[in-house]
Length: 382
Image (cartoon, rainbow, N blue to C red; front, side):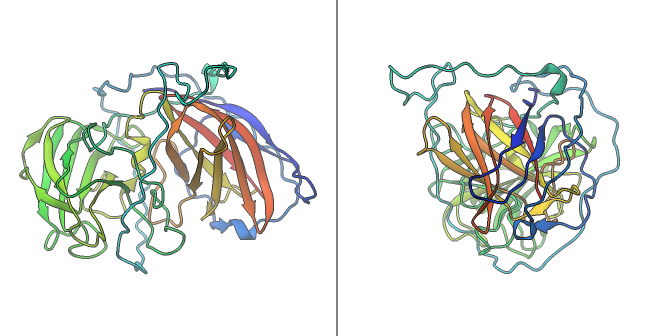
């Protein structure tokens, strides 16, 4: 496990905008409790908010990203939502791949010019860290496209055009090998006409579900990986697999509009569409890359839905990404972290973070994303 980076930053007053000061906390996480009625960015007002109390977390031993946990935590009740909804669009789009920046062994983008000044990353605060669980390798071999497509990440709706996404997409051509992300036992392999894993029959077309040899550190429940829209299935139910074993081939079965792998992580119930977690908090980052995750809430602590967080490299404005808070409660925050947004595959760097609504900048600041771990950012708005 690697620690989540933490630091305190402030909401700054934008020029000519009536936005009052506030405080956010980049520190430890809270559990996945109910936070009241969700709100959207359009409901925010530009009034002052109170400071968020500082939380102190006791440092815990960390496990390297290639290690597999061996201890079994005591199970605790799961907070998996049971709400269901009717999807307003069942077709998964062909994802738009966004290749990552090449990073040097120092963690600095290789595209940086030789004469550019170097920077020193800020130190981690050991009193404000909690463990990651990057226990899964990528489900596509390194010779192919392995990064997550950014137009339809976990919990998003592709700009309101699709149902809330319960996994991530990795675009590759038909027939690309699909591999097991970690050791485990196949609990299902085949079509989903009779055994339903999505909101309707034949949603994934051909699907594989693997139960892994570790449990969720937040709940103690079993952890499963799901591989959907496959052209072919190469394993059988009950079969043992090892990380890296070829288990299937990329296809466009089910509701897919083009060939890609739909990948999910489920906790507790392998058959439940309501048991997913964000795979970007489980998939091991590239060397020199990290993940940005956290919570965006209103002043009362209510989770905000469909908020866009613009993320731009402070040194290379051409490198831009966007994180989206989860659109509804059909998807879940991590049982250990309780996040409502996550953005992976970010090169270690300083990033400018901006939240806007109706042309008004509600939040602006800069944060350093540490490599090989999650940088946690909580943003409280009004």
